[in-house]
Image (cartoon, rainbow, N blue to C red; front, side, top):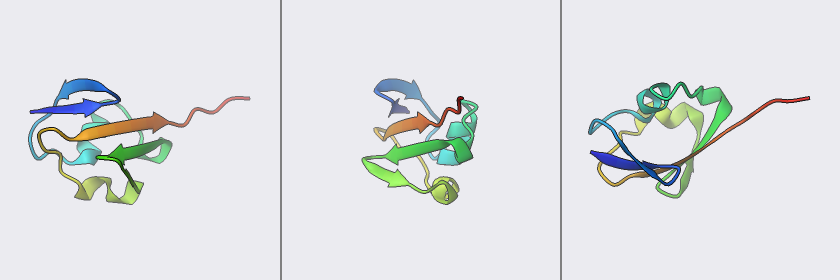
Length: 66
């Protein structure tokens, strides 16, 4: 199936948990904010959301610096 990740179409397996999907991109759930179909999702809910065709994700990573 196709989902949109930060404006780009990417393939994902239907029913994949958001937490598993993010792990596939080496994204640490403690260091990202995820907007799922225009709703901000708390990190503790990533495992309870299952992707489906046409979903839209915007992911922003925190970057430290000094």
